[in-house]
View 1 (cartoon, rainbow, N blue to C red):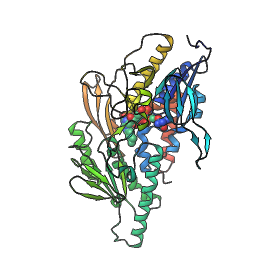
View 2: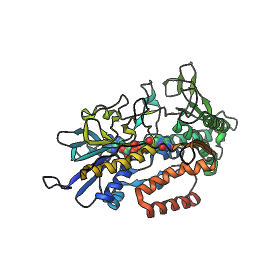
View 3: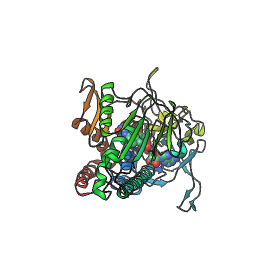
View 4: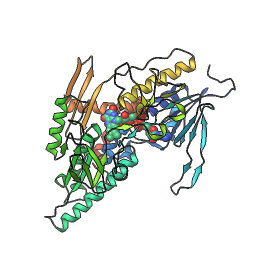
Length: 442
Ligand SMILES: Cc1cc2nc3c(=O)[nH]c(=O)nc-3n(C[C@H](O)[C@H](O)[C@H](O)COP(=O)(O)OP(=O)(O)OC[C@H]3O[C@@H](n4cnc5c(N)ncnc54)[C@H](O)[C@@H]3O)c2cc1C
């Protein structure tokens, strides 16, 4: 039964075309699209970039223009419709989402606030960084939530490197540095620290003749007793040693109490002067999700979902990825906000949406933790693999770890483009590594 009683097409609306949402609409479009169903994607941006690449975009080692996917072209290929716009609210009685007005660069309204009907709605709007209300963070720290954030960081970093280079040209004995403080010793903070050194070492080849990694000072600040809490002690120690060898100052057990325009201040009373500050100390759901349309949300604004990924108070609304809070069993921890979780949830949501429209029983989401891997740029990759194949948890480092790390992005490319285009893009990616500049400096 695919037509509604009023003869209209059954409409499945997915909000958020990120790691989970874009994979889901590609599957839905391929299966249902252009026939009796109307599959709609709503995203506030017109292009998609896989979020785990953002630290590379920020450091300039990846040109996001080459990796981003335009939703309009993707929608045409996969048989769904794309609407530009930011979700603002949900009218559950009318079964409509409310989309904020769309404005042009000058703030002039292009399309007013409007509504889109749904029969089934999937929220896949991701997460934002959580500053835990720390004074000064919102005003003075950058985050890596979006491509725009990563671009802003890269421009500011490059400007600072230019200042240092100019100062060194004028006076070779000048005490000039590009000082970056990164708050949060999880995967994002660690990966960005290493990527910055990798990029700095290449800047000399791209016109900044008197700049190299010795002019970069990165301080990585973690409140917990060690960095990378998701990884075993041994791997966290290996990553710490690698970062320190690069020149990163790794501070653990250090709580940040505030940020100013010039520095980060710690609870121990230390003032860490810095030119750029990045906040990467945890994520939460966006504020607009808090109690949205009376749905159950956590203190961190995530939508609480059942094992079927349906929200607890409305079976027609599902949530996947970082914006969903799913606790697999009593006393267990919620599924972590990771790309692999978003990928797996997209698969379960697709199956369950199919079951819902076909009136079949729904399946429970089972999270398969394949392990965690952290890339230290070109230097090394560390992590742990999970699974029967490796007999539980296995620590890995180096080339093998790098191979597995990159396979997650490969799987995403194949999921959103299909085998032929996905494999072709992987090939083009390899060619670009050879023919394109190593850094994006604009
Ligand atoms: C630097 C960095 C490195 C990471 N590395 C890893 C890693 O190595 N491995 C790993 O597993 N995970 C990693 N992650 C985490 C991973 O990126 C996220 O868990 C994953 O992207 C979540 O997928 P998602 O679909 O829930 O959300 P996202 O991929 O964030 O997509 C959300 C989408 O929703 C859209 N959106 C947001 N708000 C609205 C709105 N109001 N209206 C309309 N659209 C909206 C956004 O534009 C976006 O397209 C990393 C994250 C970062 C920042």
